Each structure stands twice: as structure tokens, then as C-alpha cells.
Amino acid sequence: MRPIAIITGASAGFGRATAIALARNNYDVVITGRRSEKLETVEEAIRSKTDADVLSLTFDIRDKEAVKEACGKLTGKWEAIDVLVNNAGLAAGLSLIHEGDVDDWEQMIDTNIKGLLYITRQITPGMVKREKGHIINIGSIAGKEAYEMGNVYNASKFAVDGLTQAMRIDLVDYGIKVTAVNPGASETEFSLVRFKGDQEQADKVYEGFTPLYAEDIAEAVLFAVSRPPHVNIDDLVIMPTSQARSRKIIRKKT
Ligand code: NDP
Ligand code: 8X3
Image (cartoon, rainbow, N blue to C red):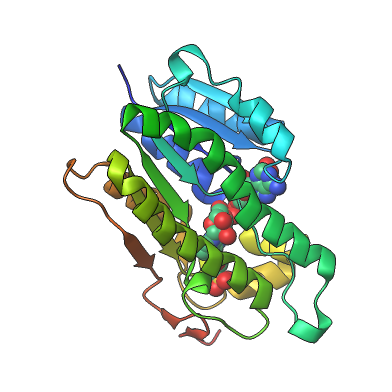
């Protein structure tokens, strides 16, 4: 039987690339997100390129009841989840702390922290029962060091770092692996979302250097899940070569 992975936020970016990479490497995949039309394109890509079985679940990860209801659909062959990739997340805005938008703050906290917890709470009891499983939390360099105007996004990713450490401790008795993958600047829909659809502002983030791409992070997830049973990758920080710190990026003048 093929192992099963559930990837949150698989309609774009890292999640999409990770779902495709896992499907190419013998996993059947459950893909989640809010945009069903985007999930359909990921389903098509997986079906056309691999033999994997794929199940799309459309829900907002901030909605506790919706998460519960969606996970209730994981029956039959989909019940025994081997890998949970907690990836759904976002940054909303970039403002000094005294100028921040409280709605943006709530969106980040509700998605990056509470959403991650809601789905983890649904999926981990089965892993504990089976004494088998692997949780990959997508953190960030923003969860390792704060940067100017990062404040609440930083805090949400520091929380992911803390939760990863806590999950590792709580789940080690049950043979469950827990890994954090913490990327630096990566060109996905991330900046377009952060700047609320302002493409020009989003493009500026990646100007003059080569950022990471979604496939780079998918490969890291694949590496972590393909280690032998006695090896757990606890914490990976992956940066573009030109980025040494959050705000130390070498850019070529154009
Ligand atoms: P994208 O914007 O490309 O993808 C984000 C994914 O999260 C989408 O599939 C989106 O799906 C999903 N998502 C967002 N909000 C919700 C929600 N409320 N409910 C369900 N799904 C949601 O960004 P990335 O791929 O770059 O981001 C993935 C993760 O990586 C995030 O946690 C981000 O913080 C982190 N990260 C990103 C970095 C970067 O530079 N790009 C660097 C370090 C970490 P939909 O809109 O369909 O709901
Ligand atoms: C995304 C990377 O540096 O834009 O987590 O916060 S950064």
C-alpha cells in the first residue's frame, strides 16, 4: 500500500510543489486549500504526471468546524495518514508595530498558528494510535530572527518553531517524527498575498538575486520523509545563497 500524505495549502507555492513531489515518490496525497479551482489544477498535474491517488479537501483552515468536517472525510484508505505537512500560511502586510492592521494580525495568527493546531489536533490521534507518522511544519527564517516590520508574522513563525519543539517532545514516545523546514526568501504567491495583490511591490522582493523556488522546499520535505526509521530531521533552515539573514540580501544592481 502506498503511504498517504496530507499537505495543507497545496493550491499554490510550497504546498503545490510538495504535493507533486510526494505524488511522484509513491505517496497518495490529500491536498487542501480554500481555492477549489486551484486545487483542481494541482489534481490534474498529479494525475497526468504520476500514478498517485489524490483527494482534494476545500476549506478555510481558520475555521475549526470546517477543519473537523473535512478531516471527517478521511475514511477508508485515506484514514491512515503517514505524513502531515503543515504548510498553509501567509504574511499579511508589512508595518511597524504601532501602525499595523489588527485584521491582518488576526489573519496571520488564525492561519499560521491556530489553523496549524486545528488540523494537527485532527490528524495526530490516528498517528499516536498507529505509533507511526511524520509531521512537517513549514516555519520560516522569520521564525528564527525578527526583522523590521515583520512583528506579528515573526511571532506567528516563532510560534511554529516552539510548537515544532513541543510536538517533537510530546510525540517521541509514539515513534512519530517531527520536522521543521524553515525557508528564506522564496518566490511563490507569498509576496503577492502579503502586499494584497500589488504585483510591483511583490516583484521588488525578489529583484536582483535568485530566491528559492517552491521545488527547493519540496525537495527538502522529500529528504526529511525519506530518511530511514532511526533518523529524524529536527530543524532545517534553507536560504537563497545571496541571503545571509532576513534583511541581508546581496542584490545585483540593474
Ligand atoms: P503561497 O501564498 O504561494 O501559498 C500559501 C498556501 O496557503 C496557499 O495554498 C493557500 O491556499 C494556503 N492558505 C493560506 N491561507 C489559508 C487559509 N486560511 N485556509 C486554507 N489555506 C490557506 O505561499 P508559500 O507557498 O510561500 O507559503 C507556504 C508557507 O511557507 C506559509 O506558511 C509561509 O508562511 C511559509 N514561508 C514562505 C516563505 C516565502 O518566502 N515564500 C518563506 C518561509 C516560509 P488558498 O489561498 O487556496 O487557501
Ligand atoms: C517568509 C520569509 O523573510 O519574507 O517567511 O519573512 S520573510
